[in-house]
Amino acid sequence: MSLFDLLAVALGLSMDAFAVSVCKGLSVRTLRLHHALLCGAWFGAFQALMPLLGYVLGSGFAGLIGSFGHWVAFFLLGFIGFNMLRESFGPDDGDPDPDFSPKAMLPLAVATSIDALAVGVSFAALKVAALPSAGLIGVVTFACSALGVGIGNLFGARYKAMAERAGGAVLMLLGCKLLAQGLLA
Image (tube, rainbow, N blue to C red; front, side, top):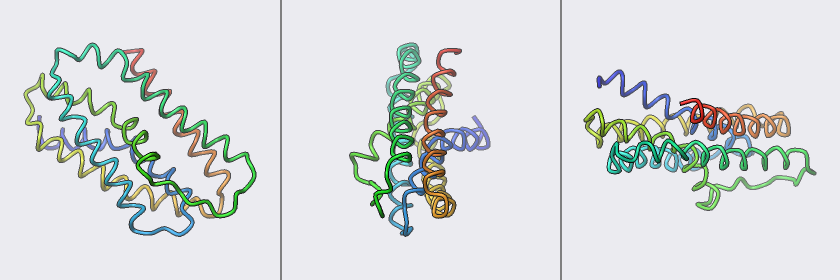
């Protein structure tokens, strides 16, 4: 696999994390560098770890992973997106603190990196060097996610409720997309 191919894979895998980071940026009134760094670190780390885990599991488990991974991502993203939509129609609770705690970030990081697990299995089958490939995926995802927080914050300040609805819808659509891809594969 060429460097160009690996970059394309890294960018493709980072798009889910980018979209979720945009949603996280929507809820930040005063953007601070640590918001972007936290999203980048969580999503970059999981996008790097999942291909390594997939590589270790090997191609023998590809059928098992492919049979339920899309359902896990669908339920996690659907649940999170539904809650965002529901909250956007509720009363304005003033100036909410966005939740960047491990309790909030862990399910998002897992949900957006499920597809990277399957990529890791394919890396094992193709005999791709796992560590440098996973590192590249992590770095690209870190950068895209950190940028996504800033983009979300820029557009979310003026249109908070509408932006929360759009963010929730995006998460739910991402879950549906992953489910459809899994069922049609």
